[in-house]
Length: 307
Ligand SMILES: Cc1ncc(COP(=O)(O)O)c(C=O)c1O
Image (cartoon, rainbow, N blue to C red):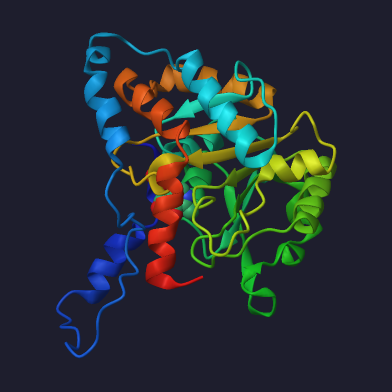
């Protein structure tokens, strides 16, 4: 058996179920679920239609790189959303949801033989970052949230000696669970650290389309471009349809950024066998090409929660 499996912690929802077993909630209060972050609204009709209209795709094996039309739809969305131009052939790759990609990226970029191979991640954090680090043979290091800065991760708390052996940094903006959004100055600091120490930044942006007011959160690729980093070196952004389009069951997202990393990531994924179903690819194209359902979704959240 792989000994690294023994280093994994039980998934938080299992722990939560254990903690709450046998507890009867006070019926006077309406419970707020702190469980799995599942969208609460219906899947848009146009996505369901695209799925059923393309069932013929079940008869073919998909390529791991995805159809050019899908990669182009993702790149066009990045252009509209962030004003960033990507080469759809080399800087975009479809993935089966951001979770598997967050995990697989660590398996691709970590060299476990590197001295003290380390993965830095925010704390609290999406538990996949930690499991990905452990199974890649690296040591996680946690940057705790700073209450004085609206619970943004305190990157300054990470000692230089830790940055020196860091191979991968996970960031999450807007952050789960704090909602903190990384401003340009924070990106600048992290890019400088990445340049100095040579680590890869994996930017988890699965909540990028759920925001209050009319201020779309800054994305990693957008920040890189604003800082003149046109090659997106050592940066991979991970984006998902799950929350944007209410389709967590479809398992669809994409990664975009440094072409050299994506080339190796594609190689890894080909062997791992993580090609996206042609049916899901067709529905994903429909979803990325449509913004109206995302605006409707955001308005529903605003009606419920204000902002
Ligand atoms: C911070 C964060 N990243 C990534 C994911 C994974 O989302 P998906 O795999 O559906 O794209 C989640 C899901 O809840 C999440 O909370």
